[in-house]
Length: 410
Image: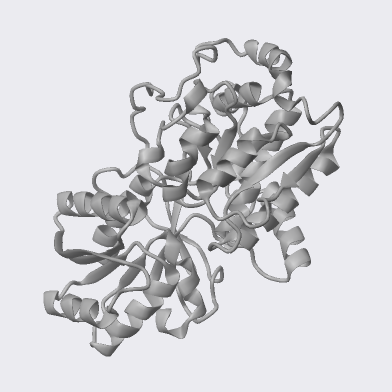
């Protein structure tokens, strides 16, 4: 793939968030020095760990779901990195055997006193469902535990809880940047949007359509699909009838491949642009020439932390890391380094993470510097568009910065 970087535009900061799950003893206005006091008074939350026991970082993902294996790999490498730095020790807490409910997993991780924080959930839907559980909303945050999501990107997660953070940009950013790129670089003015019928697909499609329309584009058709029960030939026929000059697809990789085959069979060969969930289409020859929105590209990673991660990942697993692995590593690294800096209880960690990039130095990650805004979204994280140049060519090619003009451009 040839990666094309879209930089996050400067934008005015939103009004301070009114946290729905606020614990009244943990106001954001507390001075930074209060963190150490919370570290002492909150020690009861880890009473079962014992002195010197490792801090567990929980895996907030369901075994067998897309990306799970690479999520665990990223966490394991991060924990190895943290433990090598010492003296604070960490461990990975895997989901209990047989767990299939995100809510049940969240309850088990929250109630485990050795768990200092959770990396996950990767899906926006599961994240929205479990945020109140991790935040212990029922008891006003008394036993809340921080969740740092690697890839959950719904705009509805911005400021959803004081216990939630994320290291990937929101769909609002990704869809906005993609719309500008489609207008300015592809020169497209007539778009077909086929989106997965869930919070991710709906939010992405809505934002893209709004920005595309304001830029002078026309949405020729905008239709949802259901994974596993879709007649792709019918969708391809509809798109062919509407004659767009670009097709947008915020959905899954497997669905994208099937849809592309149906489009090609109908003679539709206009540019195809997939959302961040379609990264896996690069494995199939039908995807050559398609574009994919992504949060991470191994060939664009250049920081010291990235070089360490890439070398270890390639040596250990004999393959290139994907976004699940890299962003899970980053989530665990920012948790671990903050804990090692003294925020060694759940309340102290939550407050300390809020300060990263806001008086406290940002943290070097694989994908970029890690800092959080007042809604606990990642600050300044770029979105990438990559072009599939040959089957299996993910992560190859030469990167080119893509200038953007119009609303939202820097």
